[in-house]
Length: 217
Image (cartoon, rainbow, N blue to C red; front, side, top):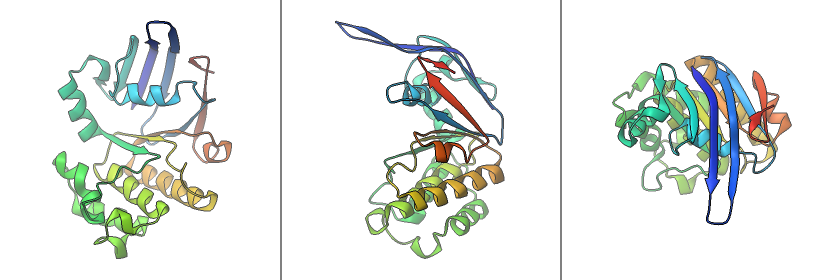
């Protein structure tokens, strides 16, 4: 579902050049969950941004199913993110003026892929049934992250990308949220790539890969 080939990225300023990614190769199958680890500054978030088409690479390829992301226009990348990708961040990025129900359905409706039966299953599995009329400010951090996960999965993405999705949660809540995410990923059949600093959380996924010196070690 995801195939990254010889991906490179260098950040340049007037004084310096920093090679963040130096030929990264990574494959993730449909239904597989992979943890991406590495020291701070190793390029983990950069890799996720390139996969999502949020930044341009200097070289290499990023394939999501049969689509080469790096060859797309900005508009085509935006369409790909809306229809094929689920994105979860440490900051929940919920829309404060929308209810839980509307936040959950937002991406799926924009992609014209809203499935009421699938959303109802997500609501049940995520334990959000009594919160559907609430607003983000009325929720705990763990509850907001559950809404963010539901929103990302509601579109039935081909690939779910998560950047430190439990970084703002206590250990028990983080474990609970990740167990649930992993189960929902298996249920939906999408591929799942998660950046984490936690060896404990990484061990909960199918496979772990480590980014070091700009390459997958």
